[in-house]
Image (cartoon, rainbow, N blue to C red; front, top):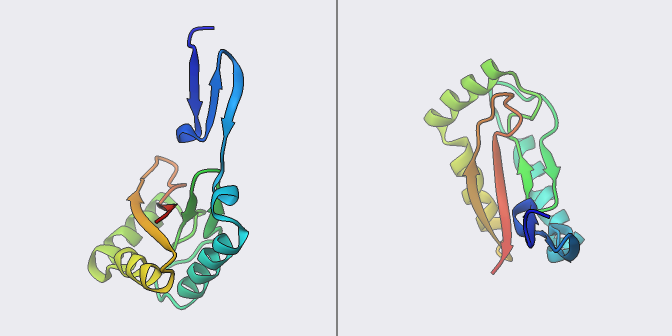
Length: 130
């Protein structure tokens, strides 16, 4: 044992002296109804987006976040680069955040951008209750 306490998944899973003592996840915290509301609202919005490319895997639920990829998680580095150029001109991400905040008043949605070498993560919203 190198440490008395270990926190993983941004503190959602916690161990003391090697024993699990705390575990939380977004689904349990918000409930399936709010998760469905968020996912359905995103899907409706993204279906009407007129962007240069859509590649698949647009929403991914994880323990502590919901990742939303308007371009799709399967995009190539070149497609991601082109989307970023397009987004800087047409504000796709910013407009989507505004739309979601207007449509889903029960949730606060925080925007965070991540660019990985594999272009797997384009955008995620970390969702928290008011």
